[in-house]
Image 1: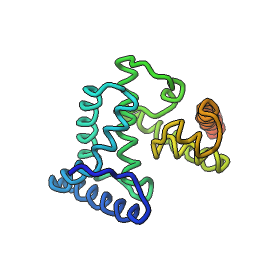
Image 2 (image 1 turned 90 degrees about the vertical axis):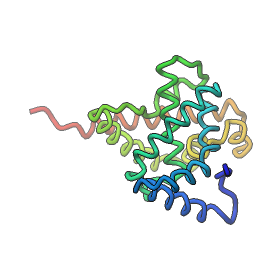
Image 3 (image 1 turned 60 degrees about the vertical axis):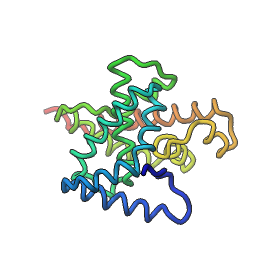
Image 4 (image 1 turned 30 degrees about the vertical axis):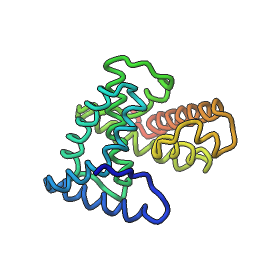
Length: 202
């Protein structure tokens, strides 16, 4: 049975703990746990994919590819760094973004998408991205509470612009502007910190 993993009062911690346990068992190559994990999360991940690629057939393919990645990477999942659903959403989101780049799907948020991490498998790239993600997290932590909350709602909880606009009591276009500026601000801060930390030339 495919359940909706959207968090509601009274069950977020229990659901998160269940998914953590299933991911741990999946990392140990437990196929039964993997099947349960798929049943509990596939509808959520499919919704994320469909919102980005806007094609059901493509979203179906992307979902299957994502679960192959989850199976292979489950052992590396760290609950101290992200919730289970946020970790899985990041995998399918990054896969969708790479697919858009490769197949040139139209998107209204191109500037934001290009700032998000790729799933490029090159080790050198991954090392560089790992460093940039750490710097991006530092920059994110130093943002104002409202900016942080807006980014979390949009990119981790997958709320649409209309939902966020209602939460903040501002126009939808203002939400888009704030999100774009926040992402650009993080990107600029990452590059500033990278330049600051570069060793001086001999």
